[in-house]
Image (cartoon, rainbow, N blue to C red; front, top):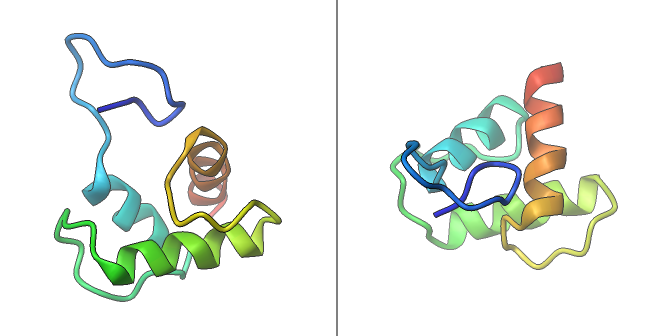
Length: 76
């Protein structure tokens, strides 16, 4: 697992799918249950978010996506 900024985690609790789902919910891209399961709805929500920010729509919550997502979440 990684931190939101993409760096490696040592003795900290890592941010995973549940946290990404929560932030996507707050920013309006995800409407399904926040369950920590990386399914098709989560992947599509990430793609939708990436498209809204002009990022490549890989569906992966890579470093660039997480940085944008954290910023959008904090602005919400």
